[in-house]
Image (cartoon, rainbow, N blue to C red; front, side):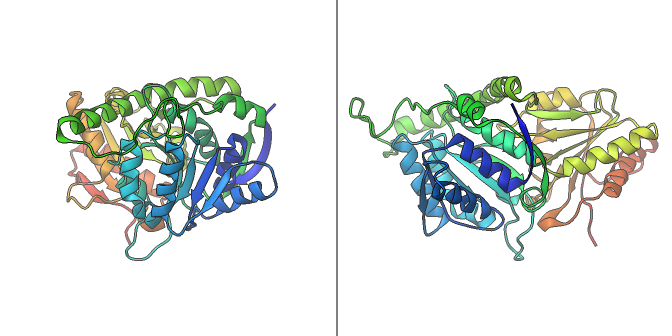
Length: 392
């Protein structure tokens, strides 16, 4: 039977790790993810789990150790944020290309500079092309649920890829909310024992991990990696279906909130979805046909599915909590627009940059964005296709 509790996002993820009881956790602390290895090490010290905790001298070493333990056949995880993820960059690519289903608890924090420790998505979005599966949470409940689903997704046949479970730094990681926890045995049975198909410590089937790949074979390896990432979409949906059976909570590639008859839709990721939903409720009460799509799965990117979900709208506001510095918008703006074009869904899009370095995103700003979209469509008012909101 599930039980209710109050936890921060970091506590929720740490509790999920306790219930999973992975084999190895190498980690180096960095705000705002520090609490996760701290809490896990406390669980170990108290004898609640038998995970091997490996304190290392840097995040580069943390991911290197994670690759080593995963290659040896151990279910492995780590946690980091911001510059810690950046220091792992080289190893992120190796983990993915070597097809290692490592789980990484990423607590999103801006990449400096200027120096700042607050939330935006520049760390996770910056790693979008490293070959990792990426799933984002709106709140503490989702952070907990997503982490429980992480290994069944990453370890799925035809996938075997590392996975980042992302939550917003401080906004989610340190805020305490009501949460519904599964029983330990339910989580244990759901995740199951790790049975790697191939691993270094298997004398009956010797293998090499990470050898030099000559030109004659390297490109095929990359294509197989791309196929595996595409397979992750089905794995996410299959695992979510099984998770609903034990939790009653539904998950997919994204959540559609009051979009069925919506003329104007806001598409975004993470905790800001809660703000957008509140604004939508307020505007719906005034007769406005508005809605929200909250993207859960960012990698692999569900372009076709989003195009189908958006095709009935008149305009969409695409919200990026990071800046690509390409003069044309953020990562979501580029990918959603490209997906719409490829699917011949010709609706107006506006890409907004918001919430950088922890800047608050308000209900009033959501009102203003929907007003801008409506004015643009109904009255022909000129609207920039790429703009910042919330500037001083």
